[in-house]
Length: 235
Ligand code: SF4
Ligand code: SF4
Image (cartoon, rainbow, N blue to C red; front, top):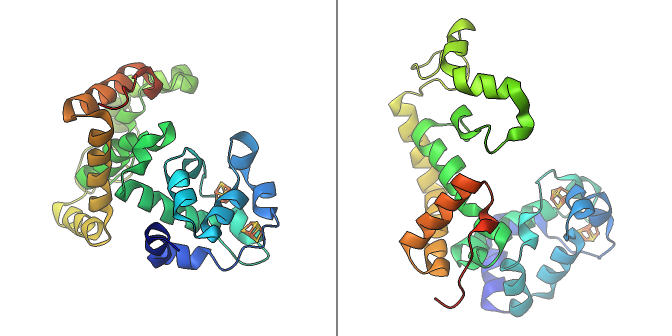
């Protein structure tokens, strides 16, 4: 049993999710992510159960731990009452804290999760704002969304759910500062801020500098595809 596994097993989510896996594969059979990607919850459980640091590190550096959509179908069907979904959350936390996430394409997308969902919550109290869903990035939403996106403030006035007003009805209201302070305190106490900082640091280490992280970010904002940024190894 290695250091990494020891750290993993301290995580309450891991303790909650892993009893003993008999490798029956039911979780993989019902997993929607396994159907569409190179991913198997059974394999994840098997690697964790090996308690082998080398295999766990490889898993933490791979795309695999980022495919799970947290639907919990695996948990309800597991004959041993395991929850791969919870184990995955513990693995993701470890991957971010150690900077391993930056080794995979799906892992690096944590930068977007941090800068969009995470920072939105800390600034506004929402994970996603209408202004984040630009038609350039989400063309599949069609012309109606394009119209709404351009006229959202005006349209919400018509609907009587104005944006950016303190305690007005509906989403996009401004949450009072005292409530925001509570929210930020929860993020700090639960370690979420630490994780967000670890994402920035891990990306900086991988790409070589803060400047490169900004280039990576800009590239995604402009092209909507992070793969357009070429990673130069061994910087
Ligand atoms: S369903 Fe449960 S016991 Fe079967 S492989 Fe998945 S986690 Fe293991
Ligand atoms: S929670 Fe994740 S691992 Fe479990 S079935 Fe859903 S997508 Fe698959």
